[in-house]
Length: 77
Image (cartoon, rainbow, N blue to C red):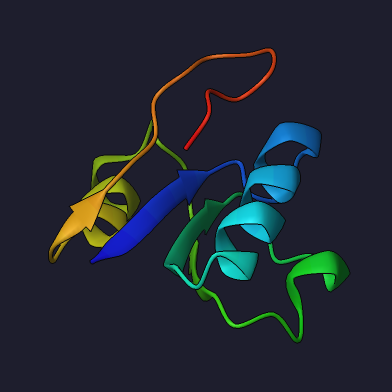
């Protein structure tokens, strides 16, 4: 099952992506724009916003799970 990370090119999101990749998870990232940091990583990129129905629908399509928190230290996975 893929894990959806929104804001994957931000500080918290990028740390989470690294951790989950090291644990062998498949990752889909919803980002405002593609960044150099994400290039070369084994992640699926969806460019868009959680505020836009079209891109959010594309990001969540398929069998996905998403860790949930707004800010601060990520919960233990």
